[in-house]
Length: 143
Image (cartoon, rainbow, N blue to C red; front, side):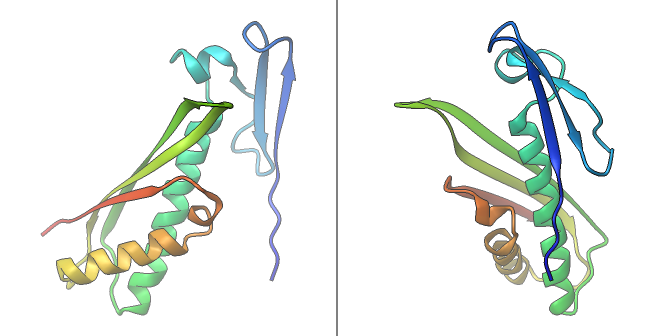
């Protein structure tokens, strides 16, 4: 099975004075603005790093749902935040770290088992497999 998805970007102008927009094949994002100021100065608009973070959080959480099911468990609720770190390095900028923070309520799960399954999802999620940067995971199981 092979699935292909598309995203696109349009950019006009220089790095600091230019602007662009990103879109997804599904139309969920359609010409959403991004630029230097939204990426490096915290101004409104999206940026590649937050899009990567959202994709990673979604992929990891779905992967964990699958793995929990294989263990005979079903999450009542899982909420994952991914934080992507972009840093200046010797030859430009690089994503140097990603931290996944998961809070989950999984009836019947033991803490050690839950953490083991969460780590398995972190390692196996297709988005995790894209990155050279270390990926940290903090997984909390609610009572």
